[in-house]
Image (tube, rainbow, N blue to C red; front, side):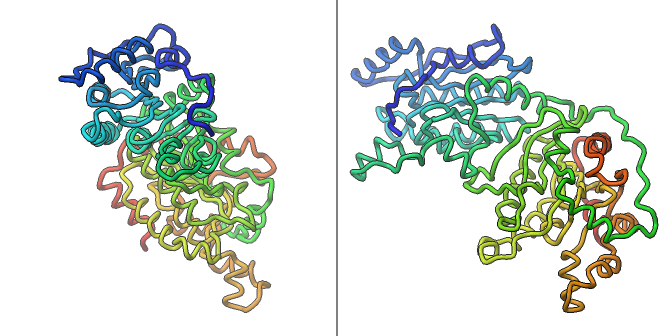
Length: 498
């Protein structure tokens, strides 16, 4: 892709017109303070102001998107390629700190060639201060959302452009640490085509989505509907369901849970949640379709949702360590955004392969357990279907555990347990019964707190089942309140210790 490709590159003000609610933008900008300047550079600044209609390379202020008040920092690429000098950085930091003081979510929309070469190292190190301000904003429990525009490169991409809790990009945008022009000058060749594109970064788990400008406002509106929802709504959970009848057959539940038409996490979100926004990957170059991560509301209750997606797990590509690293990103987001966390267990088991061993599967299971038992956020876990092995255990620690009637939890698939004990798989049903993997046994052991009925099978009534489960989850999430506190964390750890 050419750095200078012809695109529709809107100015900062045109971006605002397309994105924010009409007539709501209020500027926070004051005249930039540049200090003593070289005459040639001063002339460049005057020329840039004249050609771009802006007084610096960023525009800041507040507006409303979907009715929600939000702060914004938007690059003006027409002003010296959106480059960041000292005065630009001061404007950015002032806006970020003001957003933090006002407790506003913040949207950053960079389009920049990086730091300003005319100012050298002193401009380069300003990225530390901007990053520090963003970090303080997130530490205050406030959302930081990023929309990368064409092009975003260099120090901007390597600082405030890569710190978003949600990171989106413009279709076809050049997104890169090393700009193609610099690469050619340094190495005498062309950078491989197609690598430094928004679409390629999305495919590698570095972005949450590639979103056209015309669709951005609607998506951000849904995100803000979740993030701005009351953290402790008044909501009464439906009465507790009865556990599976005494003597219910565990093997029957296992057989039912393996039906290919059984509803999974995607059907649950489609039927029972609102304002669902899917996130993608670890943000660190890893993507695994076996794990779904997103924002959603169940009734009025906002949450981070992370769950094993039965559609994304196949014999050829079972759940691997990358999926658990995506899950751990979701755990961090719950803390940063001060949202409750909903985990969904539905897996035939983790990958048993050389790649899984070499990429640290066991360590990721252990770190998920460590993260969840100490997580400073309310946690509800759902046993939705199959619950096989360490992959299931990794998402189980929670304040409350809800189970579908025909869900189950076991250290191995029953066939594997049978192979260990009897050197065959013929005893799988007997092993399932003996090991207490079914819901009735999990209730008796204190592992499961609530059971949602299946009539007779979730696959036979997917819409009704998902809505029934969704109502229970809304009540459970609301009942947990805002923050867990030390007593709840202690109870969470004790819940699974006998």
